Image 1 (cartoon, rainbow, N blue to C red):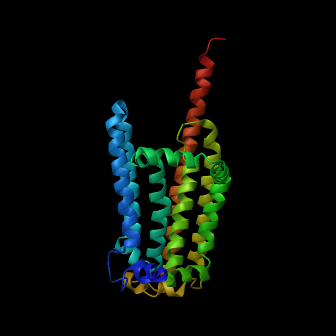
Image 2: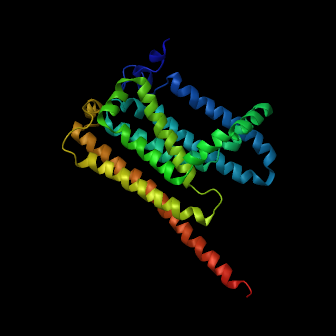
Length: 292
C-alpha cells in the first residue's frame, strides 16, 4: 500500500462515510490502542511502587481514561465519519480534541506512567535524549505561555482558512496533519498553562492566556455564526442528515465553537483566577500571623 493510499480520506473517514458509522481504520485505532496499553502497563508498575501515593495514581488514571475516551469519541465514533459531510459534527470533533481530551490528558500527568512502561535501558536512553541541549533549547522556547498560546491560535485560525480546510477533506495526509496540529498544540497549550505545583506566580499568566484564547476562538465562532456566506460548501453537503440547511449547519458549528468551547477556556481561566485569589489570601493571612 502506498503512502497516499494508507492516509487516504476513505481510510480517514471509513469507506462510504458517513454511513460507515464507527471509523476503525488502523492509522487511527492502532495509535489509540497502543497508547492505552503502554499507559496501562506503566501505571500498573507505578501502582505497585506507590504505597501512600495510590489515591493520586488512581486520580491520574481516571483522568487519563477520560481524556483517552474523549479522543476515541472524536476520532472513532460516528461523529468522525459524519464530520466529512456535516460541518457542525466536524466542529464538535475538533473541540473534543482541543478542549476536552487535551486538558484531561495533561491533568492526568501521564509522563511517569508512559516512561515506566519502557524497559530500563530505553528509559535511560529517553532521559538522555530529552536532556540534550538542542531539545532543551527548543522545548524552553515552545513551553513559554506566549509561545504555546500563539502556536495553538495559529493552528486554529490557519486550518479554518477555507482553501486549507476543504483540502483537508479531500487529502488524507492533510486531514491527519490538521488533527495532529490541533491536538499537539492543544496538549502543549494546556501543559504550559495548567498548574502542577500550585505556584502563585503561574496563575496570573495562565488566566490571561486562557481568557485571550477564549476571546479569539469565540470571535472565530461568531464569524461563522453571522456570516451569510458558506465558508466550506463541501463540508455542509450532508447537513440534511441533521435536518439542517447548509447555512444552519455552519451557524451551529459557529455556536459550538463560541459557547461550549469558550466556556471551557473561560471556565478554566475563572477557576485559576479563583485559586489565585484564594492562594493570595491564604499567604497574606499566614504572613500576618507570623511573629514580628
